[in-house]
Length: 91
Image 1 (cartoon, helix red, strand yellow):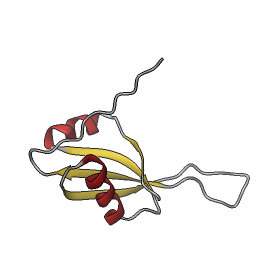
Image 2 (tube, rainbow, N blue to C red):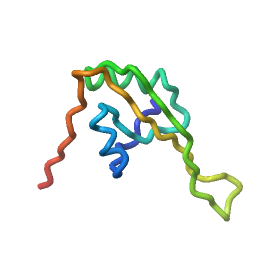
Image 3 (cartoon, rainbow, N blue to C red):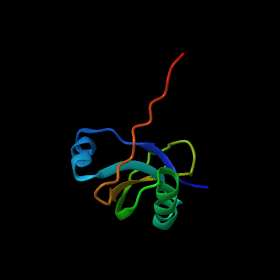
């Protein structure tokens, strides 16, 4: 299943957390419906809006295959819902 690659942590994405909006990069082959279903199922939240835009991939010189393309999604949750931070413990 294509899905969320990783969460984006930038100055803008941190400012969007106040508005209950979360930013992440997803694979370009995944659809909005798949991402919305996955977020609602995995985190137990209600998604009210999703915005996305295509980011340019890294170009490759040696091969005819153009680079790695992915999309950035901004997911807006209903008031009262939030996605808890994922904390990993290093040993």
